[in-house]
Image (cartoon, rainbow, N blue to C red; front, side):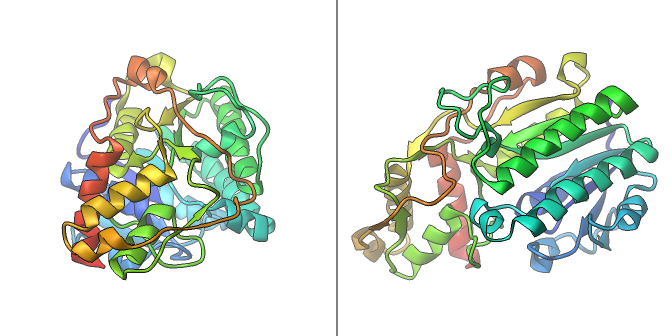
Length: 326
């Protein structure tokens, strides 16, 4: 059934970086949006621009609690499941909590969605699922062995979603996110993503520290490309796109050295001193894969995906947002 603007969407983890951007976008399209979040990693300030919108409802709850999940999906047409404990290092430090949230919590959401007869369950998968597979670009049907507890949990999500599609008829689509960045991404905390962390350090004229020699490469993906993929996954009428997974990326890769060069270039437009900040290098990080590049041909063919923001274009937008908001 085709999504309509008066349909309701549950966005789990809706106070987080990606979740809050999805909330904002779908509210602007006229959807009714329910946000489920326990604020473990999400922030109330991410919701401030739309928390008073009559089409928005916040439920404080935890996906590890089945009753919270059941309450959240009542009367909901679509679920965009973003709630998770991210970060490879966090999962290495605390695999039990990562598993409780990412596996048990995910299973709770699947059960609640199945029982509530939601039309479709779109969930955040991860490029970490490719593990030790060395081939580039990464294609959805070829994965390796996971390299971290986090990667294991995200792969288990895909297996559970496939079973719920095949066994219970729940329509599921997984989106394997590749290094998402953009507005509202948190630069604070021990597990901050590299781009907002480096932006904050450069703005303070501090030297960013790169793990390794800076030649590891990533398919950095701007938030607006991710929003586009979620909307396409939620609304697609192509039967071949249901109960499968899609890479969610730009389809290009840049080294960490390239990334820092771009950041210094764009930030120095606001403060020329930033161009002179030196970069530090440290040891490689456990669980990191050397190179990541997505094939987006499957998403283009089955969903009509057409990403609009390259790394450079996305960084210009992100740097502008951080300069105004940090």
